[in-house]
Length: 443
Ligand code: ADP
Ligand code: MG
Image (cartoon, rainbow, N blue to C red):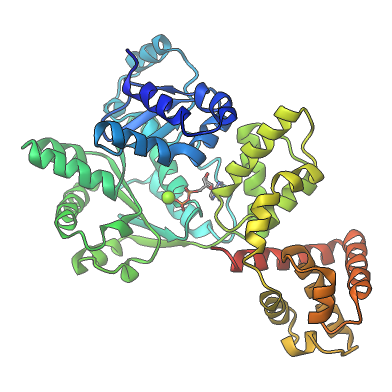
């Protein structure tokens, strides 16, 4: 009968819409050979379907596995196109030590080439690049920290992909997986195998180390793994959502060791970088978008770059379904829900606050009746952003900004739109402000 993976997908079928099932879930297949109890591998026909399923259903699939087997596996959805016979041949052709490590653990598209470098991530990028060229010699460990979706996992796996291609043994793991592995080997009395695995690799990637916090036994084990690897000049890369010093519930000796190599941070991307990342993702996923649509997406997404792939697959799926091209109007419609959700977090007060800081005008002046030109300018921008980014109606805005009535607001809107059309610099400034408002009100 069917394997556990197909059973899980059948269970999922009962819980989701028919459209989602036929369009996405039905297209993916469980890869029994590459799966283990703590991770389940599925193959999808293309990156879009893989991303869609990953974003929307990975948690659910993992949960269904847990119901069936008692173990909650990490879900990997890849895009192996080759039939099994070819892949077997390939593995036979190029035997290397890393064959024991399932390649699916590293996302093959997380490469340096696919990483867009900007001011916000340049430091971490350069550090990772040097580590990939001189593993174990320069910065060891390399510690990368920053907010969600800023590319930490991408960068660490980029190093992994380089070394994997050189035939090195690479382990990518989360704290949870490391802990599970440890417990399993402990209860099976196979700790030697655990030590062999983690202490004899060429590169150990530990993602989201902040989850070590408060887990004393595993901190101890990790400490010894760390020492063993470093003594052998084997490279360690660690990511975290915060600086080592700021991770609570972590042994001092670990904290200090995390700073022995290099600590590199990643900041939220600037608008320009966001635009380049979207272009890159379009290229990888073979989605065609024009400049206007790209700029629009860049200004509405949060700092979390992870959203981009979700948006692209959504746009692509809808456009194929309806047989229309993706243009700005279409994009607005498709993303309406997403924007509505974000809008509910943004208030006029926040906007006025940001505009006043950015344009060096007092918030009270923006709401005053002053005709001073720089104040009028700031007021107009604030009104424009409030209209676009909050659910307030024109009469509500007129009331807030002390204007006569809604026609005054509508006049301001037209004025700004005209200016944006004719003045590229002005448009960039307004887009930037809009971006700032959206990102400050994230979460
Ligand atoms: P984190 O681990 O910091 O939460 P990820 O590495 O998972 O973030 O990145 C989230 C998504 O955003 C991934 O699809 C990644 O490829 C993409 N991404 C983030 N930063 C960049 C970048 N500078 N260039 C290209 N893609 C990026
Ligand atoms: Mg990550």
